[in-house]
Amino acid sequence: MPIGRSVGRGATIRRRANVQPTLIEPSRTFAGRLRHRGLVAAGRFVVVAVWGAIMAGWLLLYVPVLLAAAALVALVWTTQGRGGGLALIALVTVALVVWSPAHPDSWERCVASRCHRFARRIRYRWNWADLMAAAEVQSRDAHHIVRVPRLLYCRLGRYADLLTVQLCPGITPEDLEAATEAIRSEFRALEVRVLPHERFRGCVWLRVICSDTLLDPTAPPKGPDADRPPDLTKLHLGRREDGEPWLLRLLGRHLLVAGATGAGKSSVVASLLVQLAPAIHAGTVRLIGIDPKGGMEFGLYRDLFHLLACETEEDMVRALEAAAELVADRARSMAGVTRQHEPTVEEPFYVVLVDEIASLTAYIGDRGLKERAKQALGRLLTKGRAPGVSVVGCVQDPRKDVLEVRNLFTTRIGLRLAEKTEVPMVLGEGARERGALCDRIPMSAPGVGYLVEDGSTVVTKVRAAYVDDDQLRWLAQTFPCPTLEVLPEVVDLPDQQRRPRKSKSEREAS
Ligand SMILES: Nc1ncnc2c1ncn2[C@@H]1O[C@H](COP(=O)(O)OP(=O)(O)OP(=O)(O)O)[C@@H](O)[C@H]1O
Image (cartoon, rainbow, N blue to C red; front, side, top):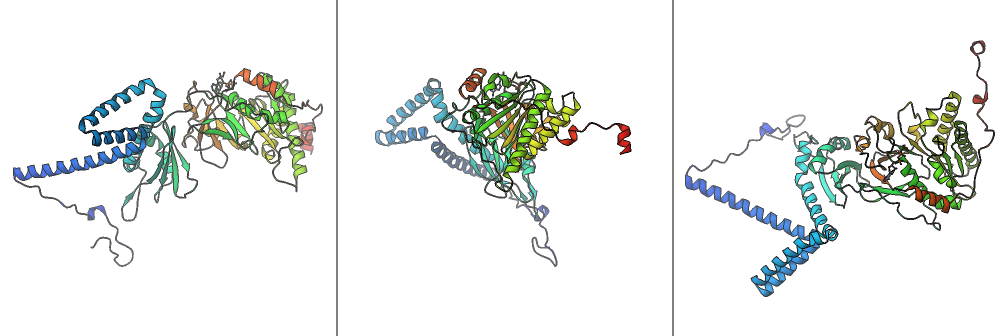
């Protein structure tokens, strides 16, 4: 039957077995065999020489210093002859050898990092199809033609490279995610992440992290500027894995920071405060602090707070309820007028900062208080975003029975976590497969974590800036909150909580 031709209904499927390889009969004489081998070797030599020349030219384009040296050698060789050319080559070689130890920074910037980038690009292009096939990221069409995703474009960076990959029929981003460990190992990268492509459908980005920019602690970006209030949609908290600044949106968001003890939760909060301080002082942002550690955390910068509850559990729950009442009032006044609150001095943006949120939702002994705390927190998290009240909560233990409301936080950061089962509890299902390896963050890297935003599958590794206690004290002295609120004596509780509990006989009667 002829291959690939339609017969009746349907089409004949081409199979590998239908393709007969053409066999070349080897020459039987010794001289013939020698001639054949010589021709093959010469052909290979020409291919390698042409390939080497192309690669050398390409490398020179990557490293302008080498290009300039090569151009100078060529000029001297043509004008002064071979002697001058060879002498210059020797001189350039010595200069390069001396440069590296004498000025390591400039050597790294001008030569080494550019050579590494060149080598990475070659490695990505050279191994791509084989790697995809070996990692089983391949599909087979009706004609038994095997396809793999195509590597379209490589954008190389100092710390991370971004590869644009076109998916082929039958291959999903999840298939690529499943192969990230194989890709990471083949490209000798630190981490590999699959991100949705912002412009082209059917393509994804592969972020290949090649050097760890988050290894060293980051200093706060710059001293807070009293004249320029911060942009609440872009608070500069630290650094991202690709070396870019980590800009966090707080307006209209709730933030959960989860991490084991010593993971650096307070450094995320402190970097946030560094950014918010001028706005706190100007009165457009107000902080409500709830510190179950009795003021150990927030007491250091007490003056930044509009309201600080840290003495008793009752106080802390009342502070939460006061914030929830504020949300309800604002929502009523905004009804039919606007859907998103604009912070002003008269109507400021409130940040409810809770250190160790599980202390309120799980570890309070009094069941009535615990229920009140849960309800107030639930009201804040479900209704607070549009009226301009955001909750920033820290938690050590993210288990469901400890923190039932965690899914209501729209931005979640997982710092170092004790177990890998905790990663989906904080960042959502599949986050660990997408690269959020919170359980592998070493203890020596406090402040490092993975960030996931609601409605997005993108996982970003970040490190919060390191703010020491002296800086925090200075911040509180320089940018104190102009208003100070005390807790209302009587909190207007919802009816159902004020009603006394019915006895069993009363319940049965009713
Ligand atoms: N971003 C950072 N960069 C460098 N070092 C940091 C950073 N954040 C925290 N550290 C260091 O790690 C130590 C522990 O951090 P931190 O107190 O913030 O952890 P935590 O998660 O709040 O712990 P706990 O839950 O016990 O309060 C700090 O004393 C500080 O020296």
